[in-house]
Amino acid sequence: MEIDYKHHGGVTVVPLYSAEDVALLPVVRPLVDWRAVYAAPAGRRSPLAALDPVVPGRDRVLLAEVARMARVGRAAVVNWRRQHADFPGPAGGTEVHPEFDRPAVVAWLLAHDKTEVPIGMPSASLVVVDAGRRTSRFRLDGPWLVLADDAEG
Image (cartoon, rainbow, N blue to C red; front, side, top):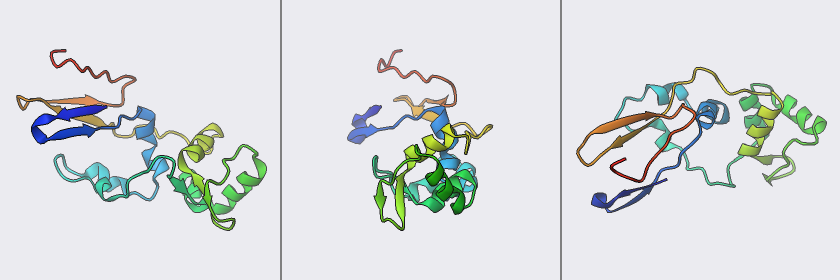
């Protein structure tokens, strides 16, 4: 989605995520201090801003992080690689330290019941401020968030 902020001199691209993607963040990014993220007060810089940006196609994890995602030991992940032909293949790294595509690993973990979407996670929201300084907050945990490009609508 693109939001045109002409009075600020440009266009900002805002990615939209599904409720499942938002709920899976603590599983997919186990090294983030999620308590600090959830406790960040409104209007303050999020601790997530300090993280390196995710480059599509280059978001990779080592076996140790796959183990943290599934809350098992690294040896369990090595066994899964041997026992399951459909375990994602290495996307880079070396033979000793292979790197795997994070989205493919998460999809495999979910498909094989090695992890699950957390329940009861705090919902994410989108805050929109219009030209009249009115603020509207939209919850992103519902099945649909409909955005219109018609300002009157």
